[in-house]
Image 1 (cartoon, protein in one colour):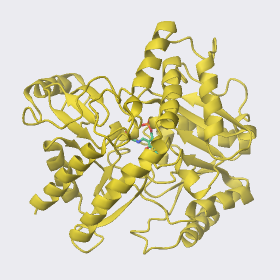
Image 2: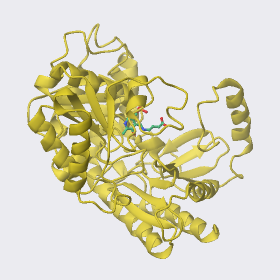
Image 3: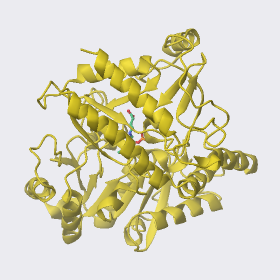
Length: 457
Ligand code: PLZ
């Protein structure tokens, strides 16, 4: 990929980053001695609440490889949770960051503005679904942007209630904890939570008996109508494909029916595309796939090639509703992060990463689909583009098997493949590699997974 050209070709790092060889290598057992030393320091210095999926410390990363401090090279099937979509150390992003650091690192956009912020806003206004007049505001994290979307919806409607869904994940701040469904690890002991947040049932084809999208939406809207009331409701916030909740793809028509109901009742329809956005699903945004046009769209993660940046983009009249000075923050739309975002967007366009996401997805779906056919412990394969997951169950049932999912992920990691889990029941293995991964590396990662399934009873 990148400057070296052919999508899917094995690359040595020249086109995807700064010289990290694109091959898996186990120089030591994992974790190696240097990582173990660092882990001891981490335990002594870092709050215990900050967890570690893989006790292996990174030294460098590029393309589809993360190299650790002991010289091990891991195949990255997680992109640092959907962030390094254009590749860790993407050359365009790295150059843009270097140039911006030399120009200036910070002025605070609210004090003396700069062009990069405006240019990112213009890009988002163009790239997000819908051709209506739009405005954008930039923030630092996904959670911060979700909170701001709620602030904007409340200011615009004069209403307070917010509806979210079963299995939702929206962040770890107080309001977004209230919006997130899962207690452990996100909420336990951290209440009280923000009021006026209500939860509706989701379309979850593997677990709702395959309700069609419209029926699932009617079910949700009935709950919303009876328990909240449209005239109290500022916004419905939904992930078009749920991320942390288990890569749950709602049945076709579910999102469109919710959006139509919102339009009819003056409710702001907010798409949280923090995990699904920026080419991950093979379109710029997951909403594009069904032609759903949200009133507000929240983005983060893949937006800036690894730098912290997030955004709320939406209808001009909604976005302009909060009073002057009502939105902001010291670092929101930091100039280095904005330069990185412009470079990441350029990479998605110049390197054909929307198409590449579909290729990566097709390869993963074929391999994981074969696993579903072959292994009764794999209940479902689902996803869109380069966002694919399998759900691990007790053989031939839908009963979640989190212990087995955890054991499989751990065994794959021990072989040098970064595999992430997710799901309300902790039984989903999710695959979301950087789009600059080669077919060869991706295939090798999936071979390791196959072997692990064969060896775990
Ligand atoms: N909305 C849809 O996926 C972040 C969370 C990891 P922040 N998902 C990864 C963890 O355990 O903290 C996410 C998301 C969706 C919002 C967020 C929040 O984004 O940048 O982590 O605040």
